Amino acid sequence: MPMRILLLLVVALVAAGCGGDDADDALGDATTALTDTEGAEETVEDALDEAEDALDELAVTLELQEQNGSGIGGTVELSATSDGTLEVEIELTGSDGGPHPAHIHRGNCIDLDPNPAFPLEDVVDGRSETEVEVTLDDLVLEEHAVNVHESPENAGTYVACADVRNQ
Image (tube, rainbow, N blue to C red; front, side):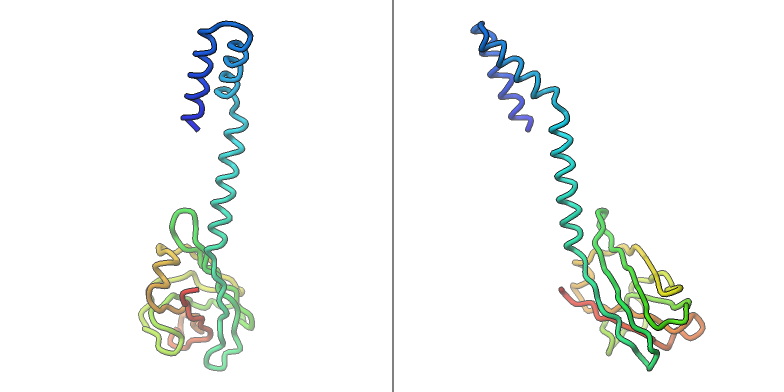
């Protein structure tokens, strides 16, 4: 864009040096190009819209599978954010309201490292939303699982789990 403006100015100055109506027209066009901010704003807005659409494509929805006869399932949505973090949204079905501690663990739902890799907000009334300091790309480099526990008092009992795989 700056190169285009510079080119218009050069053309306008050359034409102005020659005199005549064509020179005045060229100078007017160059002035318009320099003062027309509406077109620049639309270009910036288009770029922002495209960036948001690209981020939307960097979202994964996983099904939480019931564990230990809990009757609890649901979904986990992992979404990239514009600041390079990961938004984790959990929605449970079949829950009595909670709170249900939730974490991202290394491993998978069958072979889970009991030490959480990333803590998540407790699921209360079927919902939890947490921003985690990891990218989706980094998360899928190794096996991870999103795990929901029965309660803070009984965190050793898992009620729902979803494996995070390279989508």
